[in-house]
Amino acid sequence: MGASNCSSGYYPFSSSELVGTHRLSEALKDRFNVWIELDYPDKKTEMKIIEHNNPYYKVEESILEKVYLIINRTRTHHQIQTPASLRSGIALARLTGVAQKRNKAEEPNKILRSLASNVLFGAIQTKPGVKSK
Image (cartoon, rainbow, N blue to C red; front, side, top):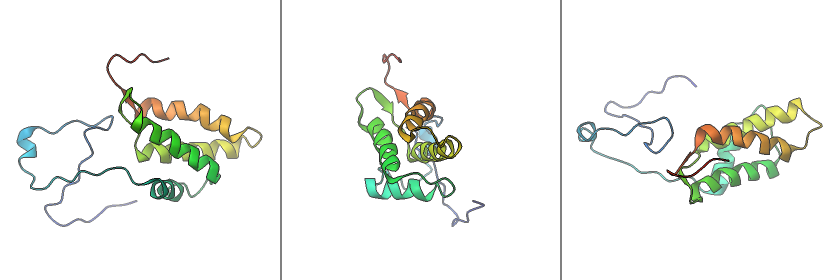
């Protein structure tokens, strides 16, 4: 992707709700003038983003739909504290495309199911007290 040039004074930050990121201290927060809170894109936009970021291994529209549904379900599930991000959807679509190309005889839905747990394992965080199966 390469380097990005931004105007001076611009500093991007990852959301503290994502797995692997940390909250900023209050002292550091005081140094920034503007905070912008972003929500997830709508379904159509998110599916286009996932498809656009998967140029080498195309997956069927029905599989893209299921990828979106899996990722979106983590955002509304009552036992999930930190849901899957758009990047998780991109990763799941890419892995599914690669696996489909390698295992042409295997059912795409079966591939998607087996890969989803691996992607979600590192992408989500359950609420305290929730037992994993």
